[in-house]
Structure formats: structure tokens, C-alpha cells
Image (cartoon, rainbow, N blue to C red; front, top):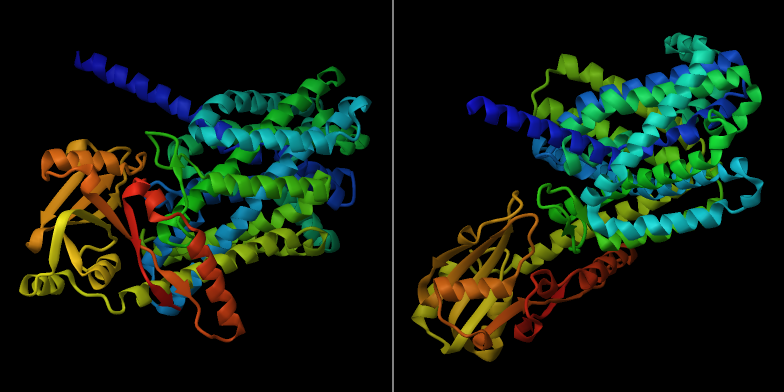
Length: 629
């Protein structure tokens, strides 16, 4: 019986692992998996056109970039720097901030993390545009009847993509995973058939081909590296999406399936253009027989739609992290899985990304034009991740400096070289991700600074709960029937709403509850562990509520539990008092005035406590005053 259960558990675990790997294919690897549509072609063109030496050099550079940047850096090293299973720039920033004490170093780390995350948002809008466009452009090769329809078809497909996001990455992964299995299998087969006709292309595994080209063609090397980096775009999504599926399924899928398929396809394109230089027009599609072109375009369109899942779901993840860390205003984050904390959907982010992606397609029109904008966002994010991960590995994981410095030094040199070469494309479209990142960085910096000032102003004259209760007992105010509930972040100080109520109405309810909501890192919390009650003097009570990450606060149900467990009250007698300050701006200089007014606008439009905690509106009393900033 013991052996049976052991074998059964092993089979069940293996089946679960395979399912997670297939699901990861449907979300994580779509971006980097569709790079063969455009990366090889743009690299050869940047190298000056088709020649034997150029093709061998490009294949060599692409192979070693995939090996060093994705396999060694991300899969082997960076994904060990997770924050309780969560990846992404913000998760890494939080870890790095815990490792440093110096105020100015903390400021630099926070600034780097914010800018890296802002660049990732740029990646999140460019990837769907360039991926889907590059696939649909195959229609011009498959049939002349659809010439000129690339942009309209792309816009329609992108609209459909963002409509299905609300179902969550778990559902998307299960649906799209099998399609990506077919995709990677197909590109591997077409590449393999081409390589078999020209096997000498495997000589490009020698790194000297790529290095020799860069040394002897310095005038072209920057443009070539700026195009080669397109082959590794999507590598950053492995880390950003780690919370969705876990490290192990992502790593195994890359090493066993994705990496070999990509290398074979890139080398297959190289073998094709060596035999037929005119195939550089579109080497990816020309790998396939003419009768398969239309099905290949359809498959590529499906794959590129899936490709967008990697960065879109990554954008959801870093948005959730930003809310939890206090880097952006509170917004609704919906969890879509009871098993994984990282599987989420953020409707506001989804809508904003959709509008920007559609605008990019309309403005840039072709994947070649978007290629110039693509590399800067990716390489900038990669450089920031390298710096932050280096700090975490040395300070938190205790890696020895003699090992960590050379390793992360090599990673950083590669990232800086790629980023620098892409900066040369600033006026060709590279301005867009930098401007978007700059704007988002500015907004986050304003929110963080404003929130810090607001908290200081709010608690500047705070009264401790112990002192308040002593005064209440010494000079009792008028107590009226009923129960008042105050939603609080801290239970050791008196909430402002309570002070305002006592000051203006000169009464207290006969029972006062200070209610604090906490979220824990498990899917659900049993009802018997949901509520913790602490009784204070003067019929004051502290009620702490615990929720799992898959749950949302349900105050009405909590009130029912409180009535059963502890208190006797009628719902009609319960009033929720919510603090609601009206923020005003002092007279500042021009810059301070702009930033303060922006913070006030963000604060005014963030989700209210009533909506966030789902409190019945008819039982809410908002009390507050003017707070000058």
C-alpha cells in the first residue's frame, strides 16, 4: 500500500509538472518564441545583406546571446533571486532594499527599480504590436488578395487578445499551451529540414564568427547588435512571470523544448539564405513549402497573440506588486486562480495597454518600424535586473564577491552593450519606450513622495489608543445605542474619523470596533481562523480579519460571524465610519505645486475604502477634514 501511494503521488506530481510546463508555454514563451519571425531578417539586413560571413556571424551572435542572456543569466542565475516565488522588477527591488541600509543607496536602488519597471511597461505595449504585425505580414507572401490588410487584421486580433485577458493566465495557459507546443514543434521541423540541406551552418556555433564580424565591421556592429537583441526579447518575461507557474516548470520548458527549437529554426533560416540569398525577403515563412504558407500564417498569428500573454501577464504582476509596495494608488486586482498567488487580472491596466498597443500599430504600420522601438525597453529592463539581482545575491544569498562580481560584471557588460547600441535608434522609434518609461517613473515618484508626506501629516498629531481610552474612562462622553466600526491600518492609534465624530457630534456609540484587514500568503483562510478579537476598555474592541490571496473582503459575512461568535447587534444598528480627507495644496514653487496637485489628483481617483472592502454603502459615514500638503 505504501508503494502504491508513493507511485501514485509520483505520477500525479509528474502529470501536474507536465501540465504546468504546457501552460507556461502558453503564457511565458510566446514572446521569445515568435522572435524568429523578424529577428534573423533584421540582423542580416543590419549586417549589410546576405553573404556567407554575414550569415555565419548572425547565427553565431544569436546563439550565444540566447545562451548567455537567457540560459545562463535568467534561467540559471536571476530566477534564484525570487521574492517568495514572485519575480519581476518590483519584487527584486523590494529584496534589494532590504539588503541595503544607506539612505542614498536605498534611493538609488528604488530609482533603478522604478525605472526598470517603467521600461517593462514599454515592453508590454510594443510586444503585442510587433509580434502580431510580423505574423500578419506573412499574408503578403501567402496571397496577393490580402495585400494591404495587415494593419486592420492586426488591430482586430489585438482587440480579441485583450478581451480574453479577464479569464486569467491559468485559463489562457491551458487553452494556448497546446498551440505553442505545435508552434515550437513546427519551427523546429522546418528549421531542421533546411539545416539538413546545408549542415555547415552549424559551424556558427563557434563564437569566433560573431566576434570577428564585430571586430572587423565596427561601423555596422552597433546596428547588428541592436537587431540581434530582438532574438532574446521575452527573456525578461521568464522572471516577471515566475509567480504564475513557478521556477521549475519555466526552466525545464526552456532547456528541454524552447531553446533547442529556437536555435534549430534560426540556423535553418541561415542555411536557407546561404542557398538562396533572395529568401532574405522573409526567411521565416520561406522555410515552409508554398502550399503550407497560409496555414503557417494562421499558426504564426495564433502564436504571436499568445506571445503577448508573456508581457501582459507580467505587467499585471508588477502592477499588483506596485500596489502592495505602495508605489501606485490602490486599484482592484482580481485573482483568477485558487492555487497560484501570481495569477491575476487588472482591468484598468488591461484597458490602458490595449489603447496604447492599438495606437502603436496605427502609427508605426510595420514590424520593421517597431523593431527600432523594441530593443531599448527590453535591454534597459535587463540591465536594471542585473544590478538588483547582483545586490540580492551578494547581500541576501551570501554569494562570495570573487564569484559574484565577475559573473554579474559579464552580464552587465552584455546588457550595457545591447542597451547602448539600441540607443542609436532613438530617433527611429526608440524615443517611445523611453518617453513612456520617463512618464511612468515620474508618476510613481510623485505618488511615493506624496504618500510619505501624507502619512506624516496624517499621523503628526495622532493620539495613542491607550491615552485616549484613559481619557474616555476619566471623562465619559455621551454613549448612544448601536455599533460603530472604524476601518484602520493601525490599531495602536486613534483613527481620525473617530476623533472627528467625537469632536463634532460629541457622542460615541455604546460599542466601538476597530477593524483591520490583513492578507496572508495562502489561497483561502478557514472561517474559524478568519477573525481575531481583542477586547479593550470602554467597550472598545479590535477586530483583525485575515484573508487569503484568492479571497476578497466580504464585510456582511464578517458581521454575521461576529453576531454568532461574540456580539449581539442588528445590521440596521451598525455604522461604518470611514476617514476621508480633502487634500489641498499649499503655495509652493512651480515644480512642487505641479507634483502636489498630481498626487492629489491620483489620491482623489484611487479606489475608496468602501469599494475596496465592499462595505454596504447605506451603512457608511464618511468623516474627515481638510489636510494641507
